[in-house]
Length: 142
Image (tube, rainbow, N blue to C red; front, side):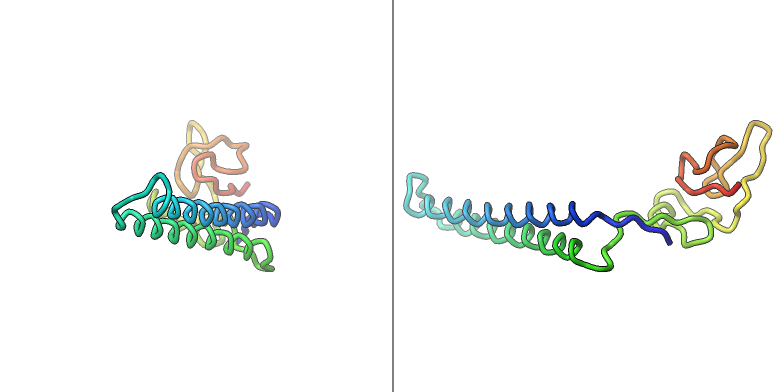
């Protein structure tokens, strides 16, 4: 299976931005909770403070988790693929099968028709000089 890996620079930038958002979230929640307890936005409802703190913790977990994942993608030798590209001799795309139904990946020759050629994978009409199907994206054998 061929695959396209995400670049290391975008992964590092994603990690930096995620950690910056986590830091912003901590500062914002601490400031707002202090205002809710003692400042002009004092709330008599302690439940509101608890909900706000819970939201802050959720924000921190999501942004820090995203930053750790992006940092892993930046440093890992075997980074996860952004896109997997398969052809007829390899495994079919499971999402394509889920949304468009199964198709025959064994057939590699496009059948000729009176008005043109058809993709051997999805059956949509194609032009004879196409290298890839414009509908399913599979490489067409010449």
